[in-house]
Amino acid sequence: MNQKLAERTDPGVAARRDRDVAYGCFAAVLLVVWGLSAVMSLPMTPDQAEGYGMLLGSWAAVMLLGAGGVALVYSIKLWREWPLPVSTVLCLSAVLIFLREDEGKVGMTRQALIWYVVCSVAIAFFCIRWFGHSRKQMQLSGST
Image (cartoon, rainbow, N blue to C red; front, side, top):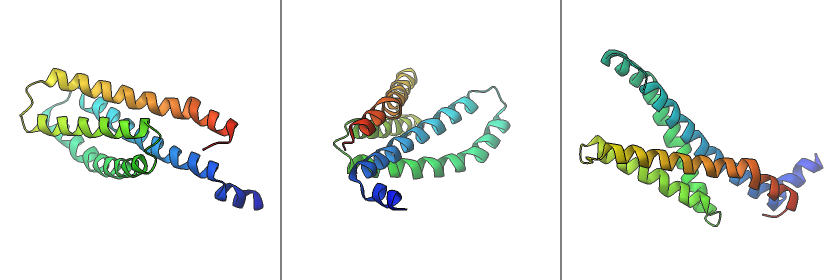
């Protein structure tokens, strides 16, 4: 019991937990976007595409808004952890390009696709970097 209380009040544990939540939210956004992209790239009729859009679209929208909002708040809170604000800017730029493309104002679908890939690879790199390396280094050093 005392160990759990000590872990809750330890600033190093709290800092790791905050970073875990932030990077986990960015990873969740990335997985949802990749999953939707994979489903929508399957060959299907317009009726099937509409059905999948209705089935998965509302769930994905809630997931993206929730996880994206939490990631945004934590990237502001942890602004010194530079990959978090960079990930936020990448996500927001991809959303803005998507909205412009959806309105038909972006005549560069190939360039937009390349930007989506660059954004997703960069965010995936930051998440893998945190969970694979930086988090373990932080635990070993005991620092925030």
